[in-house]
Length: 303
Ligand code: ADP
Ligand code: MG
Image (cartoon, rainbow, N blue to C red; front, side, top):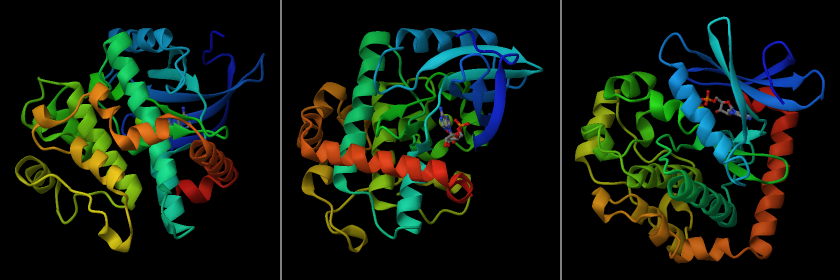
């Protein structure tokens, strides 16, 4: 459908980020529900970049693990990015599980998420020659069917072209050391780092770099300190050896020591959950239930 501001009805706001807000909207004629991200484009965004974004999304229309893009339009100084509506991002998911249910995400869920995201990133690189550049828990979304999908490539990725903007936008948490030091040489392995930080955070319930008091100190630690490392018996919990090895390899400090996607796909943690089987069915079922639960308690979970 050609969605635009004249044929969409606003239902509710589902999220907010640095660049704007995300809304649940309904298409008048078809009744279809979609998500619309409104970006104040006079600031940072320009139409060329949005068209590039559009292009990538269009080409990846039938990719299972990527949020579908329905087109962009402009309204009163805002750019509206129309996309598939999902239910919850995994930052909310893991925080809910930890705070409300007092438990952690099971490894089969982490495994399922890992396979979906590695496959999506690998597809973007191989088929579309695109690097995501903004892999983080809030850009991984799930729905009631238990699908796990990546979103927002090209939006922040292209916009956050400079160190200054990145720092200002507060997106530094998932940036690889080499990206902070030299913003020009971007490699897929910087996304592998961000994936490692993301998986560490959702597996343990805590963002791995702690104890810094301001952004500069944080950056200092990422660039000059040791990489985070996940041990099997950390946080009074148990993590399996395949999970620890997968995450720790993604988090190798020197990007040349980090694996690319082909290599990541040979890891036992990936292979275990790539083959499907009862564990994956169970993971999808639980993710679907969590998504429905989040849909039913939107205010509480997004507070
Ligand atoms: P960020 O990713 O930095 O949190 P965004 O503006 O991209 O900021 O998104 C804000 C929030 O909106 C996300 O955290 C997510 O929970 C929600 N969101 C984004 N896109 C969708 C979508 N397609 N469907 C449902 N919720 C979404
Ligand atoms: Mg986002």
